[in-house]
Length: 358
Image (cartoon, rainbow, N blue to C red):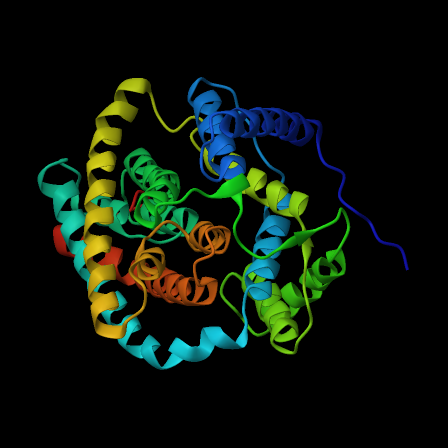
């Protein structure tokens, strides 16, 4: 039997080479200035700067999928029997999350509609805290303004990822040494055998239709090993590479999102909306804390809409109950991505917004 592996195009290699250089330089500078989580935030900032300046960068698709698999392995390795002590509280916190997130979407959509002047479909699409690609596809099909949605969604994710680690440091009164405080790391190749389980775990996850199978499949398999008593220690460089891929990918998405004037016009509203989201999410986390006893900073990471992979990785890196955070983020994302077509279709029908092909 012969296997034919796709050969990357010259353009893919060029974009990857640029992304690698930009990401590494961003990480080095972030380390020098003691930025928290330097290998994610440094590449994110550097990638955003060069992308806005007109330089296109890009991580290959298989590398991004592989990074999500490593995140799954990382999260699974952090799960131990003690994390199930709060499982009985989850129905309460999930109910609060769903009700609170509904309120946040309504408030932010009203801001975009009444103060930013977005049309109804664009306002709701910009406020929905779902996956960027999923919301964009649905919004475009229903006639939303694409650049406004992209700028609003991308700035939300980027600002949340940039702001959460410093806020965590302020609340906890400590830094994130070396950009990592999650599961212990070892020598150059120690524990890499676990990563070999990621592809078959991803395949099984797809078969049983797990959301984000490339991340949750490896997470479940690794968690089972960890709960069975298998000691899992992964090399530090693997986490650095994962941070690098994730941060550079987010930064690279700023390429071609709009002219400077358009970016500033929509960006200032997206900035206000993101601050509004963080403020409302903080209140929501306080309610969960008071109702269930879950530590406030754990609840905050669980409800802050910054993307499943991003928030899960931050939770593990900051040493903050990754299972609780990942589970709540997954429920939030699945609900939003499942309901967004119906929500946007209803809004468009109510206000007479027609899709582009009609």
